[in-house]
Length: 134
Image 1: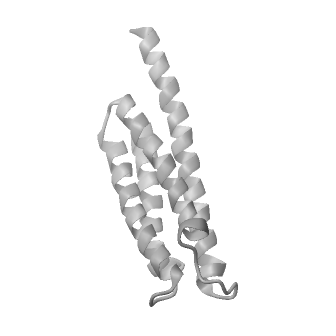
Image 2 (image 1 turned 180 degrees about the vertical axis):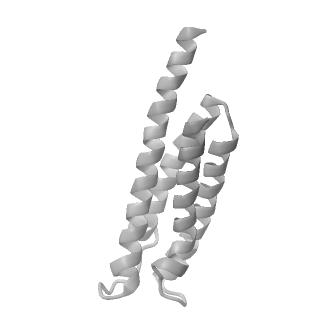
């Protein structure tokens, strides 16, 4: 129970920061620039991550939470690929989106991926222990 609440809350917070970060914390450019669309894509990925984090708290099944965290690993990887390879940001290194937003998004995505991967390992070992005891 404690693991569900802690990891689910951390995941939801990271998802919230990824969703609103490009608009409020580490702002991206407006208009039709690449970084604007990166911010829009991160909003969608962030909302998905928030939902998966909440499901991590609500669901008690170890196998279901294992699947949720596997999905979170891939969501984190995609989130990191959006500003680097899939969409990108402005090409000028002095722009705020290039200097601040992209590194922030990548760092948050890596943290999310590592957290989900660690939780996968924990849940996998927990599942092995409960199967042996039954």
